[in-house]
Image 1 (cartoon, helix red, strand yellow):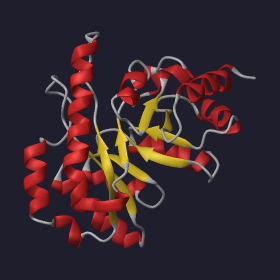
Image 2 (cartoon, helix red, strand yellow; image 1 turned 90 degrees about the vertical axis):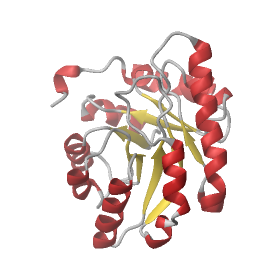
Image 3 (cartoon, helix red, strand yellow; image 1 turned 60 degrees about the horizontal axis):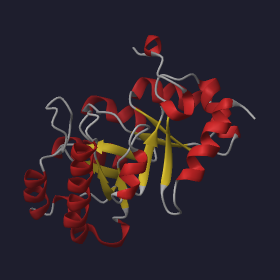
Image 4 (cartoon, one colour; image 1 turned 180 degrees about the horizontal axis):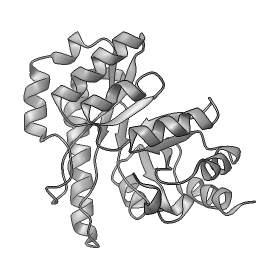
Length: 224
C-alpha cells in the first residue's frame, strides 16, 4: 500500500460516520491524485481554476471536484461545466455570476457560503450580518441554478485551541442560524483542515478539507 493510501486509511478511520472527507490536492501532481483515487477517494479540492481544469482533463471522470479557494468572477466560466461544488462563495456578485454561468451550461451547482470568522483580515468570507440581510431580500429564490448546501469557513491560524474552538463554534452558530432559509438540502458544514479537523468534527463539522496529512506538504513550486 502506498503512503498516500495509508494516510487516507488512517484519516478515514478517525472520522465518524456522516463526515465527508475532501482530499485537498492543490499543488500536488495528477499522479498523487491518481494514487488517492485508486485508494478509493473520490472528492478532491482545488483552489486555482487553471490547475483545477488541467487536472479535470487529466484524471478520471468519476472524480467529484470541489473549488475551495477564493474564486474571481472572471474565472467562474472555466469551472462551471464540470465542478460539483463551489465552497468559497463569499459575495453576492460571485453567487450571481455562478447562477448566470450555470444556467448557460444547463447545470445546477452546489455551493457553500463562506463565512469570515478568523482574526486575520486577509481571509475571505461574508460577515454573517451582511449575509443575513442579503438573504432577507430572498435573492436565491431567483437563482434556480444554484443550490445552497451549507456553510464553509477557516479558523484563525493559531496554536491556541480556545481561539480555534471559538471560531468553529461561531461557524456552527451561523450554520444553525441560516438553515431555516434553505431547508432540507442545507446539510453541509465544511470546516477543519489537516491540523485541526478532529477539533472541527467535535464542534459539528460534516465535511473536512485535508491536504498535507494525505499528500505531504504542499509543493509551492507548482503554484502559478
